[in-house]
Image (cartoon, rainbow, N blue to C red; front, side):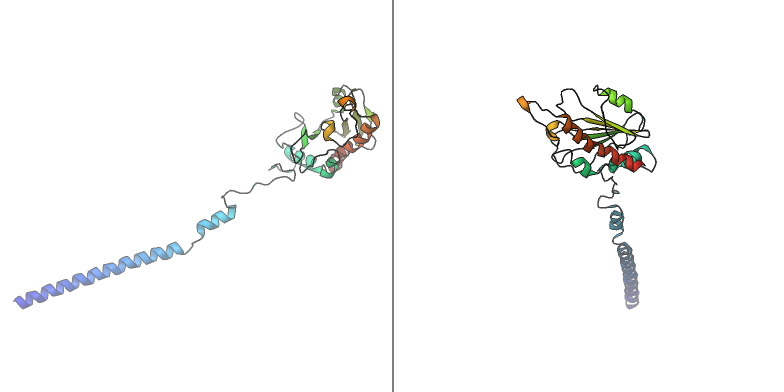
Length: 232
């Protein structure tokens, strides 16, 4: 009887070891399956980042002038970009001493309530800027009158008509106003010492001759022509 009882206990212990061993095999299999699933696509998270850039955000587009447009063709901000980017940087550069690197504009402005402003800052940031203002309306007569300098001197070969005006002190560069169709263009140069206009400074006061003003105005008017050509 004792021997029979021992054999029964030994058999039970063997059965327990088999069941226990089977359980360990099952656990190991589950763990291996989990590792295999996790390593099947090791770059899935990295691939998502690579599709949008290192930060996960899409890269914004910008206009050649450095302003972000995001505008569709035919809307006001699209016209603003087209006008300002039509002005050749080389044509603007001949007017100022500092190096120009870009044109700046606010594409959110919507005419005719607000005109298009194209601003040319210098790379050094010193001095005032060269500004070209474009209005999608016939504001030519009013723009000339606003200068309080008479009817101005006509410029030939610029749009439908153009003039340059200068204040009576002859201390500042002229202002050019031109129109083609219903698009009015106005060019305002920086202070005299920041421009390439010929001038003298007797007694410390800048003085510009009419001949120098006329020659400089012809160069300024080229900026309006650049825009008019782009809209033809």
